[in-house]
Length: 217
Image (cartoon, rainbow, N blue to C red):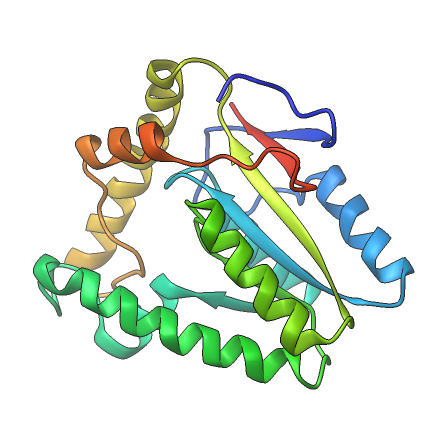
């Protein structure tokens, strides 16, 4: 993704230490504060490719700001264990569908009382997916939630984007395998380079959706 967004501000996160905490970008904090100033709860939706830092931001919001984190990967890990150890890769697609159905039920249950800020830790690969979740928020939240869409992007050509993201995925993969082999296990899965390339070439990046951009460098 090489174009800039006139409707969005951008902060940067580094490729190093991507599995640990990093400061919540100021433009994200500003967007959150704007919603709170309107007297609404926040539902922050992440959008981006694997390895871009979405889950790290979501966990930071969960631990530092008391957000309720909803994640397909987390639900699969809770109910089925570790990818490649407790369930086979061939089951992943069906488990993802099952987990997303559960996530939507959890989301509706949280939106109705409107008591907590929420972070949807998802890729939101397609515009239709983003519109679907916006619709759920509007219907179930009944105007009590404001949406903050945070897009994690790498500037440049597809090849340049792939280089940055693959470096991040490789580093995360080493830690993921170590945790699995030591019996600790982690949520998520190993991403192959061909899969990453497919994601990049087919990703429907938000344009004009009120997105807040975080540059991955």
